[in-house]
Length: 428
Image (cartoon, rainbow, N blue to C red; front, side):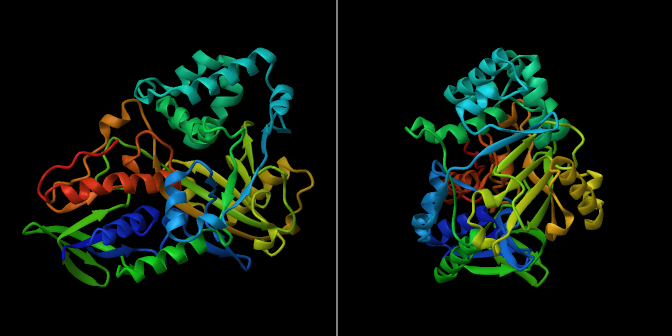
């Protein structure tokens, strides 16, 4: 029986491992962290176990929901209609309904009309390849106008991409709008957000149990130190020794990623608070000068009983992998972020912060520059039997768990069908 190694135990690696073992391969999954999950991993904060980074499931996340169904979890998803807020001009504004949109103070009527037209146009566009060759700023200005771009779009792009927005293609905003509006095209008036009770800790526990029941050898806390081709096979040297496999697939950023592809990283703080900050699940920030790029209040989505009756808030800051913020101590980030909250929320009290933790990930998603799909490398590497499938292969979507599962599903047939030494073209 052919032996495969999957390097990286995130949702991408776990999905590949599942499909490989279901296809009759012997699979070893190697993960350097103490537990599986990657960006979807859970942790403890103030006695509460929940996701290290913020995640939601959408009704339209068909690939993820199918996988959750296999794990017996799809029927348990709790669906909630959430609200969205904007912090603009030092004020909080709701953007949760058509009426909110019409009353939104920062934009005039003409601006609002052009903004709505922009979103509608993106939701109806199918030719993402054409948009991939247009800079996002040029496309948004042409549809929304310069004023709306400067007041709305530009701050939102900077919050996710930093200065990288200047070299990002319009396919980025297309993919974002496509995901959020997928359910509306199927007859829903509004997308619903959902979560599995217990969060990704429970999902990963069920996923791990399924993999082990199928015979997957899950090695966590094991670092890969080297990869070497050996007579058509792949030798993997790890912190616990070394083994040879018939084939191996790496899901971690770096291997197989073009040198001219730039990643965005994230520094994300999790706060456990006595009370919610806001009624909004997400508050988009268009004002400059705040140390974080958004406020995500999970207690607007998740029953607070899961948080011991408290509120769980995420404060993300998307930055380049070499940003000095990665070297900032937790105490410095905490002081800065809490000052930012105090500036945004006059009723915020530091004594209401029960716990504060910081996650740092240098490589989260690649910046989708114009012509990005032409930069994507084949799944096969120069080493026979060694393949690479990672987030750099997502060319017409945004990084989320559904997109990650979709990538695994699309890559699998090619990985299984192409001879070890033959080149394998990436599926886009």
